[in-house]
Image (cartoon, rainbow, N blue to C red; front, side, top):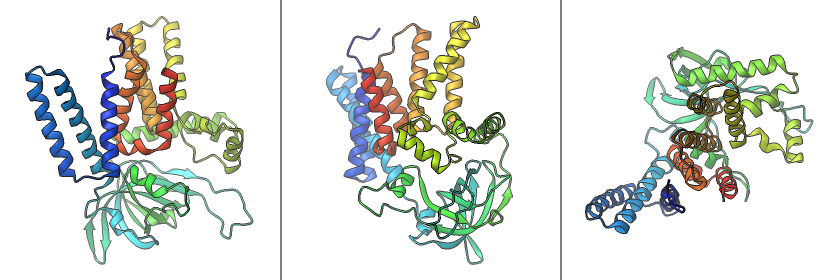
Length: 378
């Protein structure tokens, strides 16, 4: 059992945070970060062979911080020459492109009638696409990058991996226009989204080629859609959208009046899939399996597998990844007969989140999620 106060992963997270923060605000060249990482690794090997404990640990932490800075630089600062965002302008412009759907479309119901709205907003379909080519006159130019596709109407029959030809308008993400306003463009940039493409009708999106049926994302979309249909079948029309949001993370169907009521009562956070949902699922499943006289090891394996599947179905947002890693570490500790220290386990979750997307470090939701769990653990 590790000694009290021995939390190596916590120190590792601090090194990653420092490296990512330096790259965000100072933005050193990518070559400098990689060179620092290589030099620090070389120093670590040299000190490690000579059993110089403090020096080789410090060198290793510097290497982790430099590598984290380089990874954040690749995600945040670099934009390839053929990135779709380079073809977008602040104002929408016509475009024809070919792209691959990264997920099935999600339906956004139209908002309730508002007499102050000049034009009624129809139902919309929303999905993320990976752009492959853009039409340039009679020729096609190679392109790359991810974008958000918004289609007025219901876009049906599209699955993850399908190749599409889209005729519409492209524009940059809308930046914050007032001080303190939420910056949608920065949020999208952190998710790797370079532009937004709008199509006026579902007929503007033509299916060119079906994607492979074995794609994991396709199975996850089908599982989410099947669960949503079950909720709509067995619940009332007023309760089904709320249940889909709380259980599956499908928040597009929540009406504005319901969302406003949740905001006024201070319960809107329940719509976001978080550690609370994963914890309830893991604890309930483990208790149920143990009541069914299932041995401890298979029960722990089942809990780990189900929580991972649930995290993937709910889009694996940072709070869900954090909770899933915590469940996995606790299951592993219970299986090995060890005690999982809370802050060290939370640090393991932070490492996984930052490896997936280092830009999550600067999001308030991620910060509050880890801060709340750290305070509880402390």
